[in-house]
Image (tube, rainbow, N blue to C red; front, top):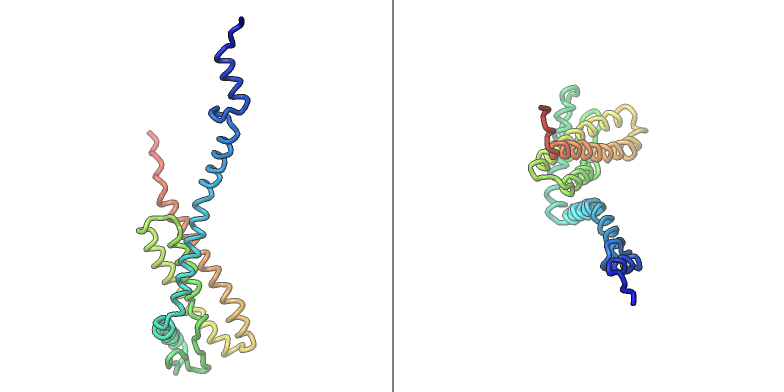
Length: 207
């Protein structure tokens, strides 16, 4: 009687699809699925956190405190600061509430305050996987830059209304709104590149 070789039987069982074998289809599929999810989880995590923070912002905007206190105060500050800039080259320019008065008048309303672009930027920074001590300077610098650039927008709209009133709505709604969305994305990209570079370990010096 011929005895079967044990090593040959083990090899045959593995080739026939024994789930204990290293090359079993089930194990390959599970490994491939885990690998696919592992490489894409950071992207899903960022998107989920971004949507969460942005949704939280819009929930805050409907609260009485934001609508009746924060937003009106910030709009009045925009009007006052813009009037201060205009007074450098304009005479008899003043701010009354959220309205700038001079050779023409301009009222600062919601949507002309850079709040939404700032929220887009802030949500992106908070959702990005970076250390808190890198997020804080990014939040401060990016938000302040957007606030200051909004004053430039208001001053430019004042002169557009004064010298080219037919272009006012186009510049206000079409151009400047798009520019601020672009700036918010650009500032986030610049910050993210900086945060990633700072996170990477320094290359070893050559011997």
